[in-house]
Amino acid sequence: MAFERAKTLTVLCGLAVVPWIGGDTMPPAPSTARVAELMARPVPFFYDLYTFRDDGGTTVVAAIAVPAGELRRERRDGRVRYRFDVRFVLADTARFDVVNTQDSVFVSLARPLSRQHLLHTYVEVLAQPSVSTLQRVIVTDVTRPGAGQLYNAPFQIPDYSGSELMLSDVAFGLPDATQGWERRGVTLALLPTSQFPEISFDVYYEIYNLPAGNRYGTEIAIRSLEQDDDGFQEIRASFSGDAAPQEDGVVQELRRIESPLPAGSYRVTITVRDEVSGVVARRSRDVDVSGWDAGTTMVPALPYTSVD
Image 1 (cartoon, rainbow, N blue to C red):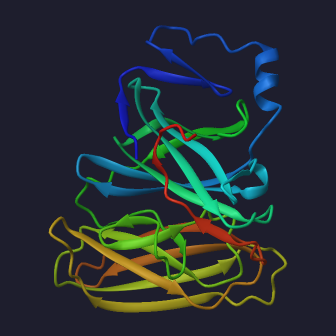
Image 2 (cartoon, one colour):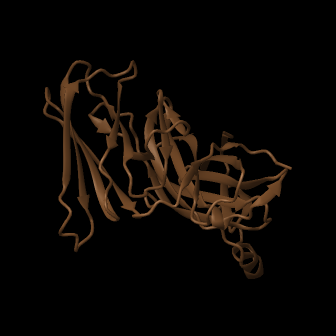
């Protein structure tokens, strides 16, 4: 995937990219007419961000899913293809430091997909910990110039460099992945947490600074966030073992939630306890189960190039 670092802050206005070389004022926004033109053909999509420890900083992974019906399909050589580009930007507004990646997603199929079918992918960058970062994710339809969508929000990039017991973000993926995001020998078909069908799914997280040989326990708890969900009983599963971290002190855990969850919103909480020191680390993530399976196709994102 493409990877860039820059010391100039990039301000994205609509879908226009305007470089900013510091100063006291931001560049002017595009005209109202231009904004209207850009937003007249939106491409709604879903995404989530996950963070993990890495040498020299924090790895930030964006899991992105685009409904096939939001893209214009093309017919070429008797097949149907869908194409979209993804740009992911992390802009530290205090240090005027920008990390970004621009990638292309392409799939060729024998027949059209249903409108709700999700084409999902991922992009990854290495960034420095920061409490003043603005994240932006932009998806554009390659076959319709000017058609696209931008989402942005403040985003805190955590610092995993400490020596205390810590957990990474909790990531979710579809089961039995044959391709997808790869990390330390694990392959995860990442899917935004708002789009999970009513099937089993994988949970991946990393434990940091757990001494080798220490006995530790892990609990996964799933509770409903629906106020009127009296029929759902909280799910709890516990595991224990002796820590066997890799050379850099990372313990990986990949767990399968075998029982499909009924449609609704849930909070998944991972709790790890070092039985030797008594120290506890905990992370949570919310997930929405849609209750129906419109179909998904994992498509790797590749460094941006034009496709004829």
